Length: 97
Image 1 (cartoon, helix red, strand yellow):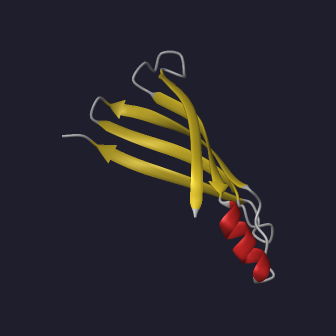
Image 2 (tube, helix red, strand yellow; image 1 turned 60 degrees about the vertical axis):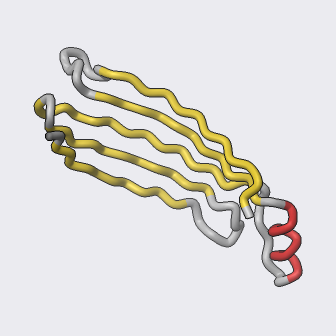
Image 3 (cartoon, rainbow, N blue to C red; image 1 turned 45 degrees about the vertical axis):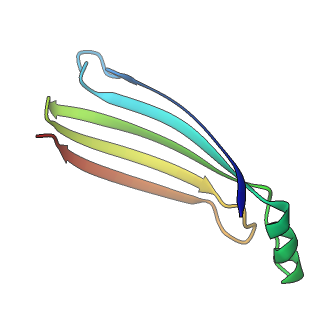
């Protein structure tokens, strides 16, 4: 069970000079794993850290006012010590109508 969740982010427009329609963002999220779950896992011979953390950043290129292409990077540090840190790269094409 997750008993606490925290997140923080910052973003803005126009990260590249002359590209005022672009958007960017950077965020962090932390998920606290309850002590009950960690105790139950220890009975099974497994362990979990108190927190799972994720950091995400994106840049959204405005091709036209209604068309955007986004690039995204997310890095996730699992609460499970046996699970490697994951990096996810993504893209998105958006058409507003």
